[in-house]
Length: 157
Image (cartoon, rainbow, N blue to C red):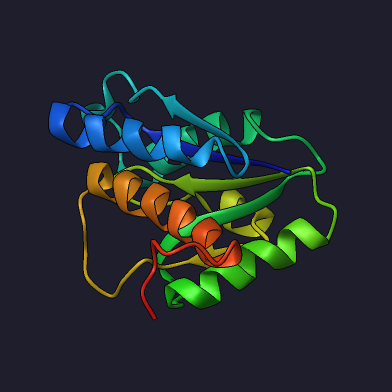
């Protein structure tokens, strides 16, 4: 199974990017992981929130194959601890799905089209984090989930 993370806009904080790179490197031992950045929209300030969500949604939908499982990282999504998240990953791996796509949306969230297409929504916390930090937190949780599944000592219970 391939796990892909899609995010709108690049990470401009070099320190965060170094940590993201570190966890991406660690993940390669457990799964095929792709992290793809969809560039920020040009002239986004001239668009309404709804127009921006629709345009970003269209760019995200272009990245999907019909067999993909789409999970939105959304503040109103299901919350789970790291162990439960590892079991969530295991369930998807056992289902035979080829690609699971997790998406971090733009500043205003997701279009209605993406909500209708998605098979699930996950929230990392009730707190609000910058989109750049969410990338790091999510990739670290993926890594943590795989170490839990392999009974490795990274996660302390």
